[in-house]
Structure formats: structure tokens, C-alpha cells
Image 1 (cartoon, rainbow, N blue to C red):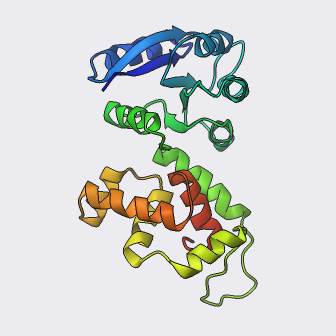
Image 2: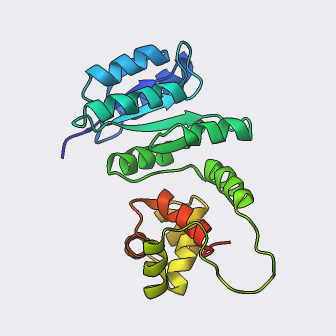
Image 3: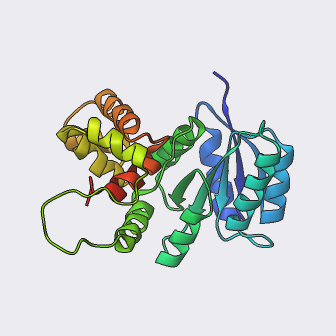
Length: 237
């Protein structure tokens, strides 16, 4: 299997050099380019064969949000370009986190993320799965919960809200099991498969099986979509 080709788009020299130093010693990862501002980063992504880009949200010239948005437009015109983007942000305030999440990146990391989690994020993102730092997930999901209207009564029933009819039918005909609901709750909280396995005292392989079943039952392409539908449907409160 070929190495995952990574570029670093980060204006702070210490952070960028630190990331490069750490990633260069990781098996299966190759740093193939760097940029120190958003315009350079966009040019780099448009001209370099890249698997995963680490993009700082606070870039000069063009910030990380605009960079990702512009690159998404480029990808629409060039569907052969499959580069994934991981947004790097600081947990400074809720607005910044929500802006990072709304930018359209594939995954989201806090800058002080541990190296093991960063490598996991790179590998998962490269594989087509969303990786969301638990700190970011908790803020985004709290915002989502606040935006969902509360029922007028306190009846202990589950109402399908803001879910397409075909998904509602699927959920009704093949509801998640109690164990799958436990896994789904931890997915919504932003936990990785390893963390879910530890908390539920099951193997990582078993967690992956539950996740696959959950995605299939909820007609979701990834964990983030499943989390959104779980909140909207009332499966997770």
C-alpha cells in the first residue's frame, strides 16, 4: 500500500515544523508539500497529487474556510481530484469552532491534538470517514440540539423530526438495537472506535461492525451524517 501523501497549510512556523517533524517519522505517511498562507495552499492543492491536506483555519491572505470552499469548487470542476481536507483550529470560542465545522472540510481537529489521534484522523479521513475532535463535536452537537424544537408535551415518545420520509420508513422497519444506540451515543459525542470499545468493554472489531450496521440502518454515508440523523430523529436526545 502506498504512503498517504500529506500537505501542511499552516502559517505558524513552529506548528508547521512540528507537524512535519512528527509526520515524517510515521510509517505510511509522506509530507509532500507545505504552504504558509491560504492562496499558496490553494495553488498547492490544485497542482499537487495530495491525499490529505491539513489546513489551519486562521491563515493569512485567504483563511482556511475560504480555502476549503474554493478548493471544493475546484474539485467540482475536476472530479478526478480526491484530496481530503482536515481543518485545524484552536478551541478559542464557539463561533470559531462552528465556522470551522461549516467550512466543508472532511474532518476537524484541535491544534493541540495528540499525535496518535492526529495520525488516526489522517488515516480515517484518507479512508473516506469523517474524524471530528470530541471537543469540536460537543460544541457543534450542543448547537444542533438547541436548534431542534422541543416537543410541547413531556410524553415519552420518539418523534421523527426533519428526517426524509424514506429514512423514517427505514428506521421504523429496522430500528437500531440497544447496543447500537449505545455506540451511536458515543459516536455523537465524537468518540473514536478505540474509545467506544474501551467504554463499552468490547473489541474494536465489534465496534466497527456496529458502526457499519448503524450507517446502513440510517442510510448515512459517514459518522457525521449518522450523528445528525440520530439527533433529528430523536434516537439520541
